[in-house]
Image (cartoon, rainbow, N blue to C red; front, side, top):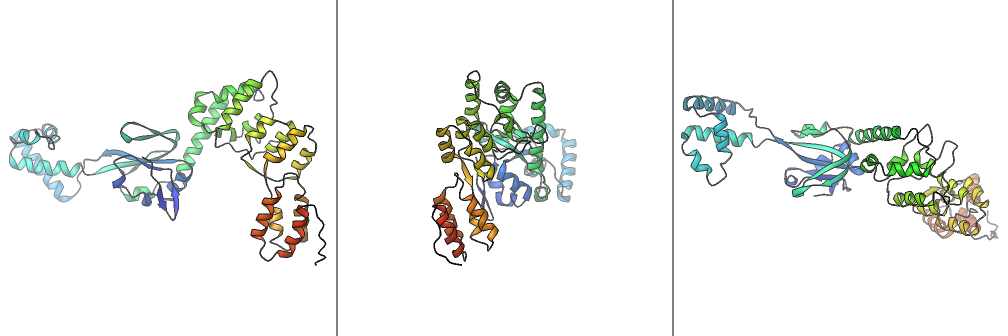
Length: 378
C-alpha cells in the first residue's frame, strides 16, 4: 500500500511500507533522515521485513539458555525437535504434542522461543519504480540503491546517498546501452526506434530519461533526435517515436546542443509540426534567437501555430517593474516586442509584482499594446 508521509508540512508519496508493517513504523521518523527524504521526493523508497533475529542478549536470557541446554541434555530431547513442536504452539494440536515434555523444559523453552521471535529486522531500499506483488506486497524495479538493514533507530540515521546510488546505476546502464549502438547512426530514425524498443531501455528508462544523458561533451540523444527531418521514407517510424515520447514524462526539453542551439530553435528552424506539438506543455526561457528564427519562417500556418503553442517564459519585464534601472527597462521593452509574448499574462504578473514600481509599470503597459506613453511623467 502506498502511503503519504507528512514531514514539516510536506508530502512524500514516494515512501512505501509493505502491508502488515505500517503499525510497526513511524514513517515521519524515517523521513527525518535527509537522504531518505530527498530520495522520496524523486524516486520510491520501500520498507519491508528482512528477517527475524532469534538472538537473546540479556544476562537473564543467557542463564535461561544455559539451564535449558542442560535440561535438553538430561531428557534427551533435542533443541530441533522442541523447536518444531514450539512452532505449533499456536495451533490446536500444539498443546497436545508438548504435554509429554517435562514442565520445566516446556516453560523455559517457550520463554526462549517467544523472546527470540520478537526481534525482527527490516530493510530500507530505494528504486525507480514500485511493482505490486501478491498479498499486498511490493517490490522495486529498475535501478536500485543498496539495501540497508535496520535493526534499531541508529541504523536509519546512517543511511546516506540513496538518490545518488540510483543515478549512478542509471548512468552506468545508459553507457551499457549506448555501447550496443556505438556503430549505429544516431542521426537515423531507425536507430531511435531500435533504442526505444530495447528491453533494457523499457526496463530502466520507461519515462524517457535516456534522452537526457550526454553522448559526448554536449550532445544528447534528444538534441540528435531534433536534428532529424521527417521525410516520406521515414515518416511512419518518425511518428511512432513521437508517439512514444508523448507519454514519457521525464524528458528534459530544455537542452542545447554542442553549438548552443536550443530545442525550440531547432523546431522553428525545421518548421516541424510534430515536434512543435510534442513540446507544447514545456516552458522555455526567452532568448532573442527565437525571434530571429521566427522571422525567417516561410510557412505562415506553422508560424502562427508556433506563436500560439510555444510556451516562452519572460522574466525581465517582471523584474523591470521591481527595480529602478533604465537598462532593465530597455531590455524589458525589447522583449515585449517578441511575437511569443503573451501580453495578458505578462500584465497580470506585472500588476502582482509591481510594488512601488508603479511609474515603471505605466511605461511598460502601453508598450504591450503598441501605444505610445503620452503621460510625460518623469
